[in-house]
Image (cartoon, rainbow, N blue to C red; front, side):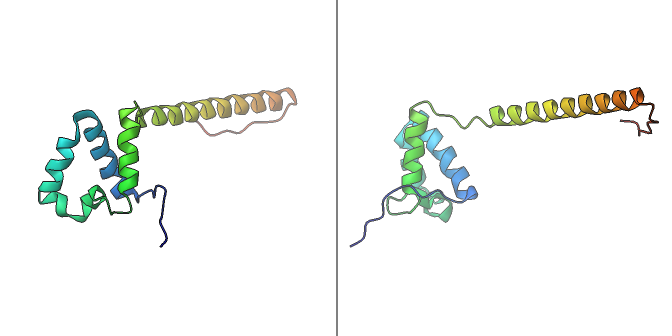
Length: 116
Protein backbone atom coordinates (compact mmCIF):
# COMPACT_ATOMS: atom_id res chain seq x y z
CA UNK A 1 0.00 0.00 0.00
CA UNK A 2 1.37 3.40 -1.00
CA UNK A 3 1.06 6.25 1.47
CA UNK A 4 1.26 9.77 0.10
CA UNK A 5 2.92 12.24 2.40
CA UNK A 6 3.51 15.93 2.13
CA UNK A 7 1.45 19.00 1.44
CA UNK A 8 -0.38 19.52 -1.84
CA UNK A 9 -0.93 23.21 -2.56
CA UNK A 10 -4.53 23.79 -3.68
CA UNK A 11 -5.49 25.90 -6.70
CA UNK A 12 -5.91 29.65 -5.98
CA UNK A 13 -9.68 29.66 -5.40
CA UNK A 14 -9.52 26.82 -2.86
CA UNK A 15 -6.29 28.18 -1.35
CA UNK A 16 -7.95 31.54 -0.67
CA UNK A 17 -10.82 29.90 1.27
CA UNK A 18 -8.45 27.50 3.07
CA UNK A 19 -6.16 30.39 4.09
CA UNK A 20 -9.03 32.54 5.39
CA UNK A 21 -10.55 29.62 7.27
CA UNK A 22 -7.18 28.58 8.73
CA UNK A 23 -6.47 32.13 9.87
CA UNK A 24 -9.86 32.37 11.57
CA UNK A 25 -9.44 28.94 13.23
CA UNK A 26 -5.92 29.87 14.41
CA UNK A 27 -7.29 33.06 16.02
CA UNK A 28 -10.64 31.78 17.31
CA UNK A 29 -10.29 28.03 17.81
CA UNK A 30 -11.61 24.81 16.29
CA UNK A 31 -15.23 25.58 17.29
CA UNK A 32 -15.47 27.68 14.11
CA UNK A 33 -14.28 24.76 12.00
CA UNK A 34 -16.83 22.47 13.66
CA UNK A 35 -19.60 25.01 12.97
CA UNK A 36 -18.67 25.01 9.26
CA UNK A 37 -18.50 21.22 9.12
CA UNK A 38 -21.99 20.98 10.68
CA UNK A 39 -23.49 23.59 8.35
CA UNK A 40 -24.80 23.15 4.81
CA UNK A 41 -21.81 25.18 3.55
CA UNK A 42 -19.46 22.64 5.12
CA UNK A 43 -20.88 19.95 2.86
CA UNK A 44 -20.03 21.89 -0.32
CA UNK A 45 -16.89 21.40 -2.44
CA UNK A 46 -15.73 24.87 -1.34
CA UNK A 47 -15.00 23.49 2.15
CA UNK A 48 -13.99 19.94 1.19
CA UNK A 49 -10.44 20.68 2.47
CA UNK A 50 -11.86 20.46 6.03
CA UNK A 51 -12.30 16.70 5.57
CA UNK A 52 -9.25 14.73 6.81
CA UNK A 53 -9.29 12.49 3.70
CA UNK A 54 -9.20 15.49 1.30
CA UNK A 55 -5.90 16.00 -0.60
CA UNK A 56 -5.78 19.66 0.53
CA UNK A 57 -6.44 18.95 4.22
CA UNK A 58 -2.71 18.80 5.04
CA UNK A 59 -2.27 22.23 3.44
CA UNK A 60 -5.11 23.61 5.56
CA UNK A 61 -3.67 22.13 8.77
CA UNK A 62 -0.23 23.48 7.84
CA UNK A 63 -1.71 26.98 7.42
CA UNK A 64 -3.37 26.82 10.85
CA UNK A 65 0.02 26.01 12.40
CA UNK A 66 1.64 28.78 10.33
CA UNK A 67 -0.87 31.37 11.59
CA UNK A 68 -0.75 30.09 15.19
CA UNK A 69 3.01 30.68 15.08
CA UNK A 70 2.56 34.29 14.02
CA UNK A 71 2.79 33.90 10.26
CA UNK A 72 1.00 36.41 8.05
CA UNK A 73 -0.05 36.74 4.42
CA UNK A 74 0.59 40.46 4.51
CA UNK A 75 -0.17 41.32 0.89
CA UNK A 76 0.26 45.04 1.62
CA UNK A 77 4.00 44.48 2.14
CA UNK A 78 4.42 42.86 -1.26
CA UNK A 79 2.33 45.56 -2.96
CA UNK A 80 4.39 48.26 -1.24
CA UNK A 81 7.62 46.59 -2.33
CA UNK A 82 6.41 46.37 -5.93
CA UNK A 83 5.29 50.00 -5.87
CA UNK A 84 8.67 51.07 -4.48
CA UNK A 85 10.41 49.02 -7.17
CA UNK A 86 8.33 50.73 -9.89
CA UNK A 87 9.11 54.17 -8.46
CA UNK A 88 12.83 53.35 -8.28
CA UNK A 89 12.80 52.06 -11.86
CA UNK A 90 10.94 55.16 -13.07
CA UNK A 91 13.41 57.47 -11.29
CA UNK A 92 16.39 55.55 -12.70
CA UNK A 93 14.88 55.68 -16.18
CA UNK A 94 14.25 59.43 -15.92
CA UNK A 95 17.80 60.03 -14.59
CA UNK A 96 19.28 57.97 -17.46
CA UNK A 97 17.21 59.91 -20.03
CA UNK A 98 18.39 63.22 -18.51
CA UNK A 99 22.03 62.04 -18.63
CA UNK A 100 21.63 60.90 -22.25
CA UNK A 101 20.09 64.29 -23.14
CA UNK A 102 22.91 66.13 -21.37
CA UNK A 103 25.54 64.01 -23.17
CA UNK A 104 23.85 64.72 -26.50
CA UNK A 105 23.82 68.47 -25.82
CA UNK A 106 27.55 68.39 -24.98
CA UNK A 107 28.19 66.73 -28.33
CA UNK A 108 26.08 69.37 -30.09
CA UNK A 109 23.37 66.93 -31.15
CA UNK A 110 19.81 68.18 -31.59
CA UNK A 111 17.35 66.60 -29.18
CA UNK A 112 13.76 66.06 -30.19
CA UNK A 113 11.68 64.75 -27.33
CA UNK A 114 8.02 64.29 -26.62
CA UNK A 115 6.64 65.78 -23.40
CA UNK A 116 6.61 63.38 -20.42
